Length: 200
Image (cartoon, rainbow, N blue to C red; front, side, top):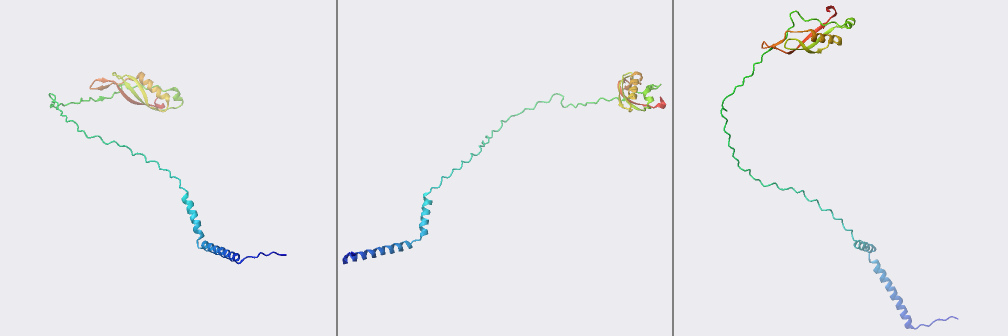
């Protein structure tokens, strides 16, 4: 056995009106939603988020260094006027003095004695080895012409010959002295001696 509720006409009319109103609201909601661009809503949300976020404060740049201080030049102060009195010239300042250079007296070179100079001895070892050569000597003569000192300026190439000539000259040689204004003076004199076996 089935039970069917019997509804009145008023109840049926209110149910139909409710269903119609519900559909009208659904259609209106769909129409309202489709009329808006969904991207605009997304953009509004994105813009809202961007606006809400605050940008971090920018760091302030350090202030520029102060310019180098250059002190201004000092004020120009003119120097005081100073008058100089010229000293009087000494007496006889206008006199012309003539200085005379001393006349240099030429010096004459020494001369070997009239009988000549003795020959230095030929070293026996040099004779055996056939050593020959020319010795150049610089001799210091005193006022009497005697050889007081000397040195070998040009070697013969053999020390034995050089030594023999120098020792003999200091020991045995005597010249006519150097003169300066007819006055005997000490001087240096250069001389060469040749060692040759055929002339020993």
